Image (cartoon, rainbow, N blue to C red; front, side, top):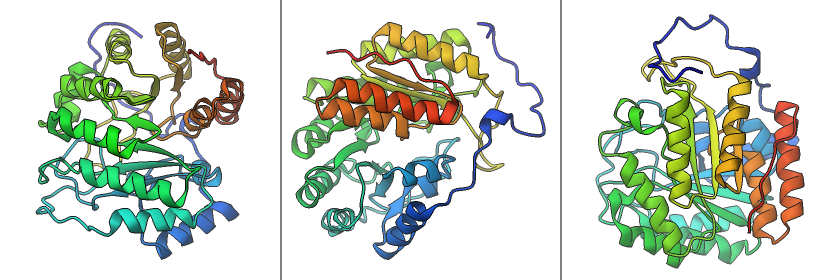
Length: 327
């Protein structure tokens, strides 16, 4: 990949072979789908049209979205509805979510949220209470919180980390610094996101995680610079995946990144000191291989983390990912 400005080229009519996925199905997938409907749980897996929904649900991992279905921000890559929720929050949601997840056979849950700029704390206390109730009903269930930037207020980040005590604190920078204004809402910024991730670590988060999309017009140098910036902020786990346009109204894909380039990003990230890097075309922020690795690390079994995280990646891409397990 050249470090020169990337000029969009006409994309092939058909997506490359490495972007093809099987339609979701299977007994566990169908069972979870029925249960989510019955318990009135909203999954970002469905809302964001994730291509890995069948794989993750089939392995007992799901991403639950709380604080409503309407985001106060309008990023150009995201399929979640945008608007003004008017400060409305369901006070029963933490308890109901905890009870509902207690009925499911899950090993790892990602608890994500829409941005709620209409709330004074951005929803931090609500997320913290939801984690508490999940842990009450499912003490062994590992909980990752994938949250917004809480409008750049450190006290709100501290509320979630100290009161909720999630096993993993995740916040996505989404794209490289040069493309922030092109892809993200104007209220988002690279520096604010970096601050949030650094604050979470300083407030006591055991593991922090972030994600980058590529194929949006960035250069190789842009990606490496962004990765180093995340590592400098203390981020432990990084996922890198291909941006796919959810609808014609969203930002266009500039190019499809080759598998060998994803391999190179992964190797570079491990050299930088990330504890784990999942880098591949269909990798998403909530990704089975990363979560398999985290289950091992959080359970105190580094060898299991390496084995299961690598196996999950091999299942998808046909080659075992290199892992770096740091103390």
